[in-house]
Picture (spheres, rainbow, N blue to C red):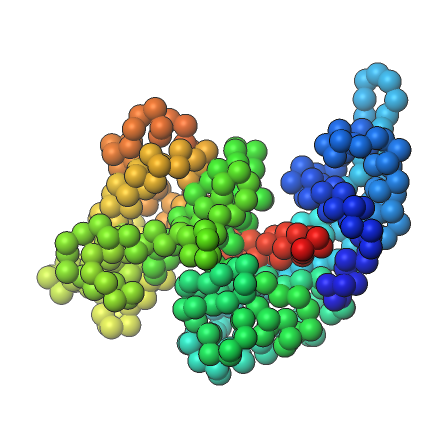
Length: 406
């Protein structure tokens, strides 16, 4: 479905288009609602809202959920988003896997294919592989016709500008914005965003909206990212580069970060830091169930360390406590600055649960202001490795709706 075709389902009248976009955005955020409530939200009469909603129902974008149960008076009808005909595709990849989720207009997961083996590299060949995987998923893995997919959201590692569609860290050799390249390749409007920001939005929309509008999502993977939600909106910053939490200078440790600088937070509080510390300890003579099993040091992966932690490997647990304490110390600074409703710990390292959450929580209580940290809940990610790809779906829908009046 082209962007113009999607727009025509709403309206060609600019004023009506704006109203209808606001109706849909309200229902995305709040779920099914009655005509009187929608009328008050838009500041229009009930007959006007009834006409607008009726046209959205006629075009298949909304549906009537039936009458709302009420103890007295008339029983008004509830209207909400349809769960048919309009779909959004989310794509998320790591260094070793690529994942897909297809979502309907109302936010339900229709189909998923997770952790397909994939080798990331900043090359034209890898970009072609991503495009081939996406095309194969749309053409062969799902029952939904390709023309019913309204938009695609693709998470990209590193620094990018979601507003212009340019990626500056990876795949910036095409000359055109990466989002435009994807759109032309797939024939479907495609948006790109940072993987940490997408994961933050996925967690927020699916699990944490009821806890407040401000959320920090710590993406603890091989590196360390941060997704920021302010007033219910993903915060990208002026150029889309917000959230470089892992590259704040925190130490005089002379450890070179992969960004090329020394002393970044990522060098002491990330999967990469855990891996380095583990190798150092093993070389010093410490034992682990990983090395006892005969695995060579050079073959040990972050997944191995996570699995060993869950099996109560003491060396991994000790190192995670160090990593968690350092992460919590610097998260305390963010809590003092942002005063968020919720801080969510996500990414692969979040799989170890309390082994990481407890030292983070202790450090936050130790280093942040009491009156501030009492306002903030610390939570483990609920979606875990689904967070990024579900966030990509949610952002694809959000941006498609927002583009109606651009």
